[in-house]
Amino acid sequence: MTFLADWAEWLPSLLQGLGTSLLLTLCVAGIGFPLGLGLALLSIAPARIVRILSIAFIEIFRGIPLLVVIFFAYFGFPDIELVISAFATIVVAHSLNLGAYSSEVFRAGILHVGPGQREAARSLGLTPWHAFSRVVLPQALRAVPGPLMSFLIMVFQSTSLAFAIGVGEMTSQAFSIGSMTFDYLSVLVLAGIIYAIICVVSARIVARFEAKMRT
Amino acid sequence: MTFDNARILLKADAIEKTFRGNRVLDGISMDVHAGEVIALIGPSGAGKSTFLRCLNYLEQPTGGSLHLDGEPVFADPLKPAKSELLSLRRRVGMVFQTFNLFPHLSVVENVTMAQRLNGLRSTSEAEEYALKLLAQVGVEEKAEARPSECSGGQQQRIAIARALSQDPELMLFDEPTSALDPEVGNDVLRVMRDLADAGTTMIVVTHEMRFAERVADRVLLLDEGRILEEGPPERVFRHPEHARTSRFLHAVLDR
Image (cartoon, rainbow over all chains, first blue to last red; front, top):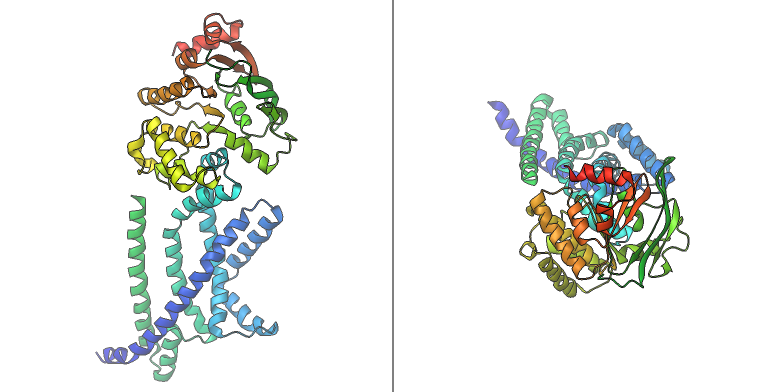
């Protein structure tokens, strides 16, 4: 049972990394979800050119693997004289990815609101803005929390990609422990267990929340 | 007659609607007097609902014009300005076959929302007025409920209160009881009859021939996008001029 002693020794630094992972997740969600809503609105805008540009943006950032976007940002930003921390780089790259993916959820939510609702709003003489902001959007947003929370779990998992540019989140911490002890497998198992516990517990909470929303 | 014969509230002139080359409305003209109740009847596909929806521009006609109270509604009927559309829709209330209440709002909020957003009344006045309208249609006990907690008949009566909350000069009803069981449908028809008795100007697309006969001042029978027959209900129902009308009436009354 020597590995338990190792784990106890490594745990504090892994938990410190976990803190960074969670902070990253929070920042990415805070930027990525509003971006997704914005993109969803633009992708159904009346002006054709706006629709085309926003859908192109969405498809591009859904098409490029997140790790590639991270490297683009990491090596590309200095080329345009933009110097930001590795942490901020991850937040930007990851938010673009999350925005593109979550825009589909918001878009589906908006399109899910039936034409009868829009007609009722118009027939009452509401301005197009009021019809959208008071009738369509609130109903659209009621349908999205479940899928968005699932996204949040995936975001948390993919914060591990931040290790590629040296942000000290949990996977990076595990690697640096591994590089010192050469016990990569053991420390990665521990990190994996922590990831899994958090994801499984969150997924249960999401499932319970969704069941409650349905009733 | 309960209405003022001299005052024409709504004048629809040669309303046309073409969907992808398909002529749904073939130039329908109609004068509606203040206080008058008009029943629009006819076989399905005749264009009744489309015509009704052209009257508040939920469908934009491809030809013809509208006048409200003697004034043209649009400077250019084919290019309606946003302000003209809003003003038309605030003067004309509409009730849908499928109610279309806002499910995320309580019943009373359904009735207050447009009053507040359109700047018609303050929040407290809107609420007071909404409760009065809900009492008038007999659903005041549901004021704080969600629409989903109300029966279909209650939902439709709430939808009527919502439309009335704008103080419309004219009410449009698009098959208001077609989605309801007959007994709850009768509650809705009773509310509509009360409105008619109170002098509300109404245009009702309906398959309820008995309602049309008893409540309407005038019946218009539409067929293939045209007015086939028009007149007081007793004449249209008892002595139709066209064989097509009697065939239609037989078909619906035999059901």
